Length: 323
Image (cartoon, rainbow, N blue to C red):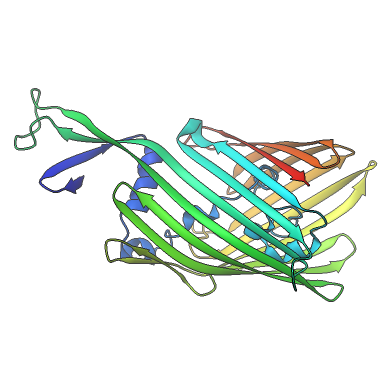
């Protein structure tokens, strides 16, 4: 129940929208203590990464690097614009990601600006026809308003090479969250590392929210996103005339455990032949599949299918254009 003034209203929405609304609209020390304050930042970005089960921290080589591992921006070769959109769980959750990556920016070997948005539209708030009377056959709830819940994260990222094997990067991020009359903002930083162990073998780490990112609400409460780390290894090898990549990742800290309390493991495999790529991945026992097409040397198109046990399956689409 949500109380506004003298009226008491109930939230009537589907389970996915209710979960998002509760986590976003009820900032409290309980949420912060259990590590859920920053879960919207862990949903992933990019159809290729999603199809690989989000095992992308060591494999990322596109404009999503500001999100996944800013150290990879040191390899940016051309100005690149990136766009992703998904209506997840049959449209219950809208996800968008846009980014621009530039090579050779100032003292950095690569720079990017990216924006992540998650939104739940048309959340229905209801009120009794007569708020002063008890609920009954003649006093049923009616829709009194519809609201939107939205989370935004803006990343400004840079990467630099430190020798032939090691790259480092930093992402500064600003956060804005809103639902109904509640809103919040926050600032944080991520640090990315990448090490080329040998030809075709890469180790990587993305240290997220290294300063414990505060989320300050207009209700005079503050959530804090606890530090976490994404670790990964990627192995790339030529097989049957094409490039095969195997990526494994793990996340620790924050709320990085599955329902059984075990650490989350991500696995992805990709086979790329000429202008076609086939992908499969696994994240927390949920399967993912995807296809990548390069119809032009400067254009990359990707689609991903994500399986979910409790909610509807999802499709994601992304495009990358060099300019």
